[in-house]
Length: 260
Ligand code: ADP
Image 1: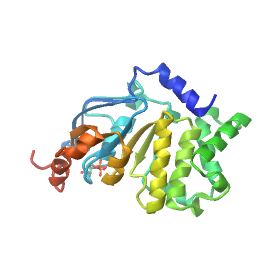
Image 2: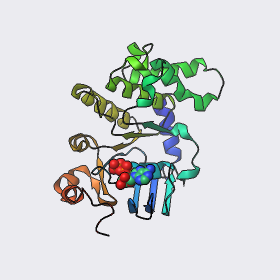
Image 3: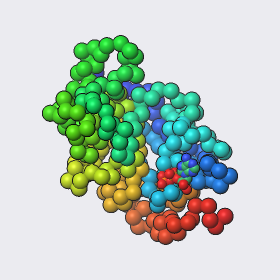
Image 4: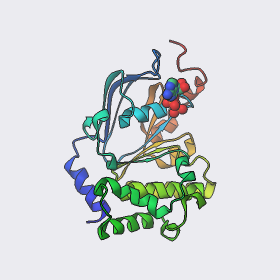
């Protein structure tokens, strides 16, 4: 079965369970909340962008969604399970801002992508089918001809593609990207978003945390605008017409922790 077919089957089996579900979530690293009373659901196949000024709680919200932090109040669920108890990591592909941890790793692109299979095979050897899945993932992101190149020798855009391929090889249902195109040249950025579009069309749910508003408005179908609280959650076209951006960003500088 193809990657997409397998994913569709799983999504079909769990259509009732949102990918992410936050209900009245409040969280603070100290007594002051940095995320307050946030409720949102992301259903399978959506392409959602979370925007907000620096320090508005985007990364914190992502960590709450993924169970890396536990809400002080409210509940966070991932694929129907409490997020902090969710343990099927292969279903989530995370692409960090710089993918910097990889910079020093003297390993090849193919080796990075093979890691995506590890949750499926444990410490066992990769089967011919696993290797075929790795090849397909490399092909999907246009990195087949770089498969034997070391990650250290890639451009920023190529490195991000390699990490997406790792998520595809793991058969992730949800791709979470935290400002993935920071430091990536303009031409590669466009190709990168085209790839995200194609993956979303193939059924992968995409959660994009993004500072570049033009990228968001061109790509995502739904925007969540955050500054500790949710200022807007809805279709991108409505977001562009609304005053949510001005409200969230206009008071950005010291909004968190002030006015309370
Ligand atoms: P964003 O991703 O929108 O830039 P963050 O979620 O990183 O925002 O940060 C939200 C607020 O929480 C900021 O005021 C930040 O300084 C604070 N913060 C983030 N991480 C931590 C941490 N580990 N410990 C204490 N405060 C933190």
